[in-house]
Image (cartoon, rainbow, N blue to C red; front, side, top):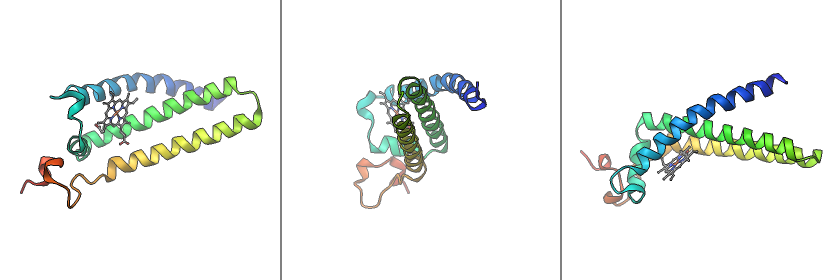
Length: 131
Ligand code: HEM
């Protein structure tokens, strides 16, 4: 087995276990609040993303889920696509879409402005109007 394939094999097992914990925490925190899924609005998301703990939690979940998912897709393409040109094209588009989502998702987590100027106060997290 190639060295890189061996590393990918280990990564899938380790990230799979970590993802179970991250995803169930994510679902519990977002869905078990008062009001459940209906309580998710800009103030809730902006409030979470203003907290470094949730920023790093989300970025870890984002990176692991995307790399785990795209590596799984890479293996499926490798197993089922026989035409070399098509296989290469699919690998390239998978790589580009994964990298794009990782960059955009990471930017959102670290650059979201929780208190956009001019927005109605009742749509913003409470700390925007405090003081
Ligand atoms: C009913 C199911 C789900 C709901 C209601 C939900 C809700 C949300 C909400 C409100 C956010 C905004 C930020 C935050 O709360 O931390 C978010 C972000 C995120 N969710 Fe979920 N989620 C669900 C399922 C999942 C699953 C299954 C995964 C991964 C496999 C996932 C991965 C992520 C990631 C990576 C982010 C951060 C995205 C970014 O801003 O870059 N979510 N989700």
